[in-house]
Image (cartoon, rainbow, N blue to C red):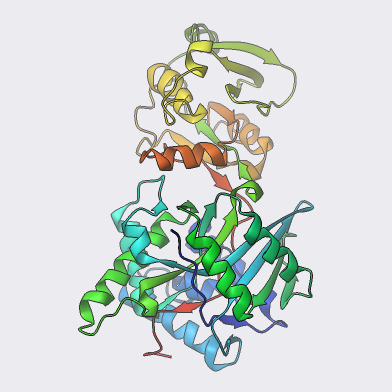
Length: 417
């Protein structure tokens, strides 16, 4: 049984929604966020990455950073930029990229379901990143970056979403990157009750993106429960902001690899050592894999298509049979010497949204020696791994388009509004 709970969202006025909406806090570093927010005082980056409004010498985890985020959020509310809806509602959030639209439901997920594993995870989290988001939630008293959840398609949910989105949206803007963002309010008690009931029939939810934010929401929720002698379980801190997408609508991009050196090997030696695990065939142009079991490799100005052996392609374990796992275990580790991709400074990761030209650029510049283009991990693979209670290798999935921060804000209570 899964929960979707209506809430009274703070949302930007339609005339400024495009100015407020910002990329998630974790896809930009501080310098990139400063540049992107320059000349845009309403950008939600001032809340999600408030260090951009302080001296760059201040540590990112200094209490003044979180206090500045709280101040900036309250300013947006005080100035009428963010306005609270009068009654609890659910919302539809649509994103259109390259002519393709995905429709998600915005509501609140359950902290308890995070802890009891109704909400399935597939990534490890880092304590330092968890604590950063925990402190942001504690100080701002808000969830302002939604968790990206997915669930098996449900015809009943689809029907309600289709009916709601046949009407004019409440908000509609096209961001600077060309992605269109639209939202609709679901405030009909009948529709809300039906959606809540339909999600009760869905046995589990899956975190597609936002493992650190969801962990932080769950940790702070438990803290609030322990601090409240009259805790009931229905307080807002028991729930966190999420966007729920049906699995069939999600698009996972490739997450590619670049490595600084060939571990002392020449190109010829590298190609020799690929056997018997991979067959390597040179190709005249950039190569983006077209099926599972293929990897593109760019080295010394030449592209190759690597095809994993039948033995590797018939591995049963859901983690070990991922293309990123096969590349790591049978090429990057034994041949190039990248033992731990989480910690090895010789390897870097490039989101597929940047294109294969970015891989060529980094190799041709001499910064890197070899690049690998990957076939995207599927949503079905993600779900299978989460269902098995296993963890994906680092940098296995890259979702696009990214959810924007600031379009919906959920407060844990109204004590500091």
